[in-house]
Image 1 (spheres, helix red, strand yellow):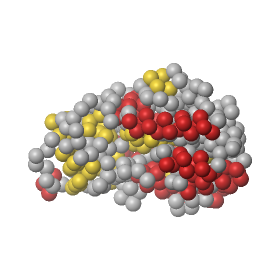
Image 2: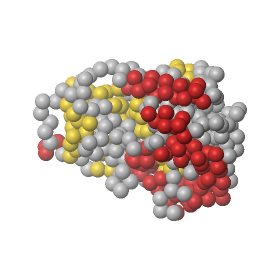
Image 3: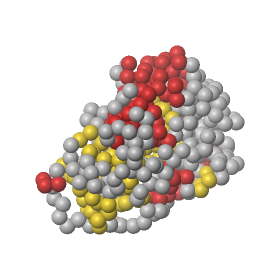
Image 4: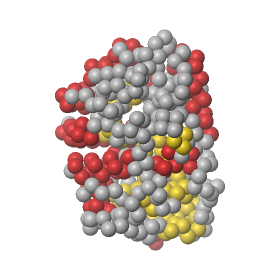
Amino acid sequence: MHGKLVIRNIGTILTGKLEEPSLEADCVVCERGEIVAIGRERDLDVDNADGLIDAKGVTLAPGLIDSHVHPVIGDYTPRQQQINWIDSCLHGGVTTMISAGEVHMPGRPRDIVGLKAMAIASQRWYENFRPSGVKMLAGAPVIEEGMEEQDFRDLAEAGVRLLGEVGLGSVKAGDKAKQMVAWARKYGIQSTIHTGGPSIPGSGLIDKDVVLEADADIIGHINGGHTALPDDQIRCLCEGCKRGIELVHNGNERAALFAMRTAYEIGQPERIILGTDAPAGSGVQPLGILRMIAMLSSLGDVPAETAFCFATGNTARMRGLGSGIVEVGRAADFVFVDRAQHAPGKDMLASIRQGNLPGVGMTVIDGIVRSARSRNTPPAERLPEVVKAVAAAASGGP
């Protein structure tokens, strides 16, 4: 059910837009899973609501987007033998995830027929099933030697819109990767390239020359996954192309700060997007995106509301998503956050600037409440209240 949802008594709205990261408004109205009005409650049509949330003065932000995950099937990852990892990330405010390749599937096929079949299957099962309501954009094949243009056309016609990390398969040379990335782009498939030292057995070093020649749409984990390139190569990548600069939790934090500062130096902060690169050897980080926001804000000296844009609107615009920004016509995907109990700072944003995580009080996806008080963040000072529920359950469902 996607009826009319009214969210009232909002303290601050974080928009996800770098050009206007916060908005003075206290009410959002949603219908059929989309935002239809934003403003002051007294000026909006709030009658006949199917659902009502009293925000109790907390901050409303776009649902966070994890630009770099490695799902396998459902809400299970064999990489760490862990179930419900996606649900745990929902409790960290993440409402959308983007696959950088289903590389942890045991026996992952490397032949062209098999890898295409697995990509199509993955795209289908996450399209048909959203763990805890989280939007998982998956079906990201890792390119292998021998693929031809027709293979990319076949994938696109079947609904595949992503490539897994270039470099995790047998294609590691820049010239070969460039041709396949171009074929993918021709058919509307967005690409990400592995950057830095090898992350898992079978991967290898991908340096700046390969990244620049391949010209993938996203410079995947420019701060390494886990091992970063030298600073001069990171700077060269930031300055040498206009592609997405992806910073991940499972990478080198100092290198992430260096890449972010370089993006600012060249006047292109809109290129910065965030991911976790999980599940991985480092495990699953349910609060990984929030931790990146706090780290970049506190150590990188950027306003917390701007750091939220890296994890929402920047990614949404670069990836062509309907979520990630609080504006009319966008998906009603939200996270309600407030200063953690006993945290320093005059308010939540000031507390984040000091390196502290906020407390998540609720998540909403497509206008439906998917989780209440987070079981993973520190407890928030204030919690929103569902006065009248629109629908369904916080676990599972489309």
